Image (cartoon, rainbow, N blue to C red; front, side, top):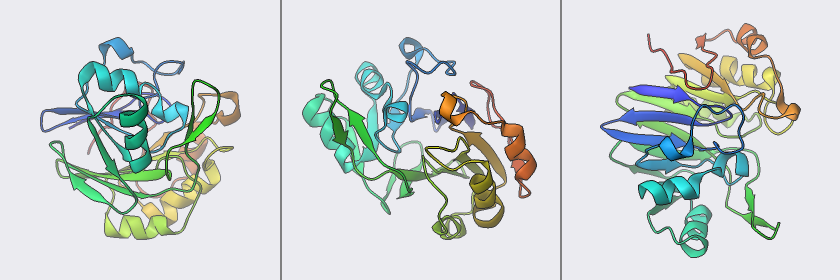
Length: 230
């Protein structure tokens, strides 16, 4: 399975001949290695509605007629406001099977809205994390979140092969809380730090995070690089 990181919280994978992107923040993301015009996807998965995650969803969805998987409110927004009907609304605790594998949404502690063309925030449902079961691998994309103890429950129920976790601080966990989550709660085989260095508020040294993690392997990926499975 190809599983790659593309700046901020964007990940991309190919499984069962389907192409999937999570939180496609490309335009306006100086760390992204992608061009929207070149991205081909069958599915788009959103953890929440903030612009640095919702990103290029509308353009990618319409260009590829891709299915967008996200909160019920994201689904309503896309169909009612943007005329995109190929959506799968879900919510926390729900699990569904798709051609590439399964998606289960779990809780995240954050917020979720998108500023419309009039500068007004539009509520887009609860923020969520993702449990992806793909080609025999379990991937936990925590989404934007603070530290919470039920991460242990989530990982106990779904032993994690790869965890994508934010380290940027200010808006999400920083290095101290993220490393605690990995060491004490999630304990994945592989951890990839995300959501850092995109903006001045969230500049961090991922090597400090790597040094703090004692469970499993930390892979610090540059945009465009893939997870290396053992």
